Image 1 (cartoon, rainbow, N blue to C red):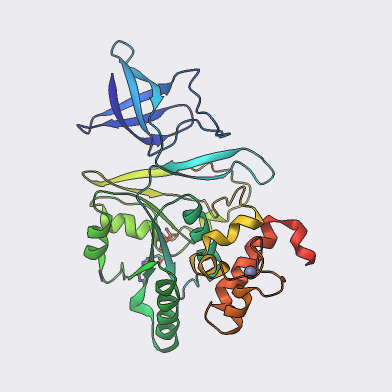
Image 2 (image 1 turned 90 degrees about the vertical axis):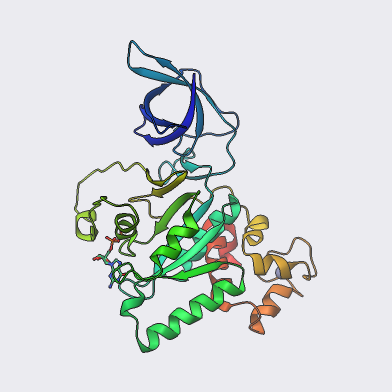
Length: 310
Ligand code: GDP
Ligand code: ZN
């Protein structure tokens, strides 16, 4: 019997690292099922598991998954009702963004923040490439920092290229399982290479990514940074599923909207066109950012077709 963390998964095989850093190749016990989750993968990276070792076969069998602290999922495919657990037991989610080359849109940020709020995962917004920002870029960066700090998120400005604030970042992630996300080109691979000595992930893969007819199944990967410290890369995962978040629930995941919603006239107000909506009044008075509110509406309409006509 052993206990460890799933650090790699290919669908049928799992690599489990025990407390001593030893890696075990594991399969799962046929009947292993978790109640309540309709996932295509019963075991995800980050899972804490108990396994039995078969020394003769040089393989092990996972027979128990310890109750997950949290997890993050995506839809198995666009139309599918099933989903894939990307990773579990996360201590922090880092969203890497850039002001230019490429521009990260706040809608992308807000979609991710909603997901993280819904799954109870603390977030750090890391602004990369500060070495190339001048004039208006710096103003935009300050506006982004101010906006997200004011609604309760921490931010960190870094340059991977010029090694600015990298040690700071390293300290923040210590002893944590950290999900790393960000739009393509924001510097995720570069950051992993920077943080983990000897790692050489390919960077700047944008053109290869768009090659036609190439079916690439990407599995999230968990990289060991140090004792108890892991970075989880999510290559090719463009969006995380905001699944099963109804209209009456979505605003709970915009902290500043949620806070003010207590002053709306109707307690079932979803802040679209109801009379005496404190949220819309706050947007009009610039107490709530119009950009965040617009992103709220976009996500609301995307998730709930019926509100489109309102
Ligand atoms: P990914 O798609 O998120 O994995 O991004 P990559 O790590 O492949 O980085 C995309 C491009 O941005 C590469 O050409 C990197 O060299 C570049 N890059 C990454 N970090 C920085 C930085 O701090 N400053 C500058 N100027 N370029 C960077
Ligand atoms: Zn309202």
